[in-house]
Image (cartoon, rainbow, N blue to C red; front, side, top):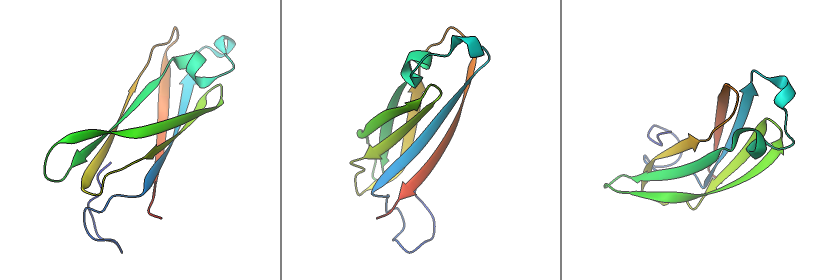
Length: 107
């Protein structure tokens, strides 16, 4: 998710936070567990890339919002960040796919 481009803020200005929605889809509906993490054991890591070089880990808070949905809030994005990457790692006993939607909050 690069932060380059035109807009009211100066070029390369990162957002205050990024909100990410993750929806998982399972091919086995009978394996429904009460939380997203119980279904997929998903771990999310947010990494910022600095414009001058180097990387750092951004703070990623998450909340299970149902058996197949999770909302992430990524904060502490540094001022010189040119790109933010999310790494999703997990395991499951059934084949799954994930749909990821992100919204930058400039506030």
